[in-house]
Length: 504
Image 1 (cartoon, rainbow, N blue to C red):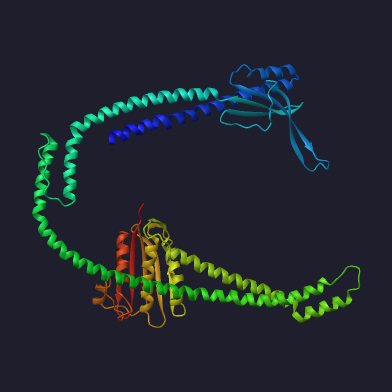
Image 2 (cartoon, rainbow, N blue to C red):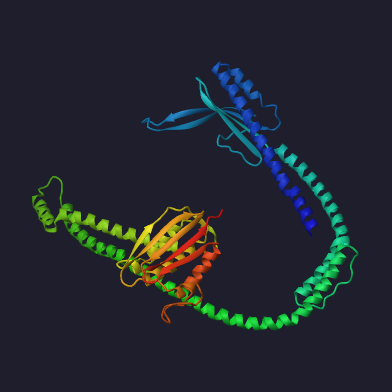
């Protein structure tokens, strides 16, 4: 099969790719050749017209007339035609001479598969114009037919040669190997009664004897493995079911926190927009009343009564104050819209669906997005102090690291009773990105610190936490080949230190 694939691929290359590349090569050279001929004729015409040698124009055009590939050659004169006001102009082309004379030349003619058209402009003191030359591609098509015939002949020869080699290999090597493969497939399907006869006296024969010995050993061990495997499978199924329920509970808790925070954050700027629009509507109503008075004004008539009504209406609505108020309302609405856009942008950055895709990401931007998500849990109670070292971006799973940040920062906020502070510091240490998240909470005793990353371990009340948040965090950091450490002093606070390697 391998040899057949190679032979067929080579034949396909000869029949399809090679002729196509040759055609591109021929066309490229043909275009260059015709372009050079066109430039030569145009140069001859330009010299002849400059010297007012009109016979020389015909001589220049005769340069390409003997070429059997020539379809036509035309000499055009270009004129600039202005409009009556001399504000715009058009370029008109007039056919002065064509060869053959019977050819109906179209100045708008372009290249096709069967015709290559080239033009070259010229400019002299007498006139300006261009030379247009058309050549057919019959010669290229003839060459391509010859190449296809040669390629087909070579492909047939190579195919026959490959069939011969394949037949020889199947008789001497493939047949014994296939027999061993069939036996191995049956063993893989669970049939440990398979045995292969001595198929040759070479290395393949020795491989067959080793295969028989391996099958015998597998058969002896199968009974014990089956018994142990059944016990392990039952236990594993129970653990997976319990773990799945707990992981889902953790995800739902995070989703609830995220939804509540975003709803709270978006509500404030939306209120700005809503209140601003209501006020603008009232101002617009006043302006409509004033505008109706202005629309009553008529040129050439006595408008004193209307003007007096306009002045009274302007005083009534407080026009100047109304305009100033409208500017303030527009600014307030814009500010609310910008804040909403920022929140949605950070939410998109935080909740990106790229958990299984490595990409370059800025960790500090990920932390900022997380803080926006948790703003409602932090503001008016926890002050966040950021000391960013402007660390370079790293190759990572950004969505998973955002989950790490939200787990640790949320835990830090929950560890603070009343008001407190959270310090977030980033730096590069020993070619690793280091993120330190420290809180002013209650801290934890040594026995709790030792078990902080254990699955299902939690100090929260029953029903409040699953104990999977920091366990999942530990697994994500380990997946990134990084390290996570915790330092805590009871009554002082806790600090998590995350170290992530820079990788190409």
